[in-house]
Length: 499
Image 1 (cartoon, rainbow, N blue to C red):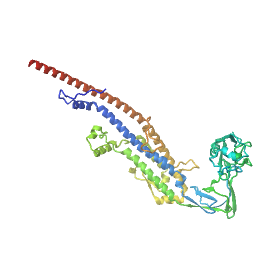
Image 2 (cartoon, rainbow, N blue to C red):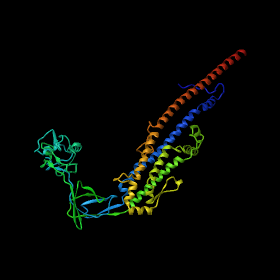
Image 3 (cartoon, rainbow, N blue to C red):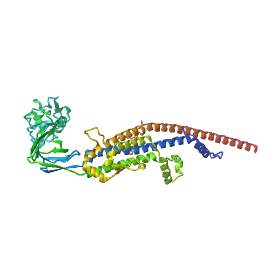
């Protein structure tokens, strides 16, 4: 209920001014509490800014640099019969040229129907959107049924309603995990093709003898089909070598080959070394590393101006926008000075570099002066030479080796980023996955709970102050009423005496 406020009409006292002065002193605890909350919110925003950089560095940058293509100095070129295969050199490419003839493509166990009649009585054609009932109606050799079945490799029969479209029926087959096959329908020939997803000798394909679904498409002559491996012939000056592979994609002499078609002539695959792409990747990484290092060092060493506290609304009313901006820049400065999480992150980054400092120095990557806090520098000529002489050694420094327990620099840095991001999430409620600067904070974080507590305390204190202010006005109103009553009585007495 709002208190009726009488502001010195009778007494002539400036009630509002007096109450305001009394409330100013009374509001000091609330103002300090509000300031502390504002400082914590600014600090949390600072954490989110740093977290954004860490997530971006780990998720986007390190992940990209850690791909084999980013550090690959090898390029494969195919000449001759280019329809036979395509080739992509990996970092393991040994430079050996290969003259390859594709003898046979790998083929998973496959069954194909004879083909269904596709033209309806009205002259229109069956399509993938036509129902199984539509297909049966023009393929009269198949008995009409409400449900059609197909059984793959002696598994549980897959039941398909006549009201399903051909496309829907095929999707149901493909999505049946136990079947482990891929079915396709050709709208031109009316043929249904079913292929095993397994490329090995165990990848046989058996269809049930009593199945009715495949009969809609002309039936399968041989319900049992077997897998065929890929076969190539590598030609050489002293003869040829026959090789067999499980699939049409495999690695040979460090080159990833993908067979495209069976040929009678050969395709020649050669590899060349070009360090340009790897050099640019390393230069880009060093730049990103230095930028992150600088951002963290700036925050942990930033000056803190304790005399600059958050401004109240009343204070802002007395200042220009420029003055407010300058003040708040000082007030927000140094909120993460000597922060434990940021300092430990810097330590982990430097440790990852220190572990490989000798190897990095050997390829032209060194740290600057002590006051530069670990900034990296590149001797491009030395790095180019290392990439040309021993590209695999350079790759191992950064990406590690899959054939050993050697951990690459990128993985070591990524581990440090993960730990830091986890700590920031626990303390400030920042996202572990998003670098979005507008991402919401988790309310159950340490700071989230503290800010919630601040909000509750501020609300309670504000209610107490409102009650206190109302009581002050009630007392002044009572005084005004008493004075008014006294004046009225005095006036009556004077009138009586003068009569």
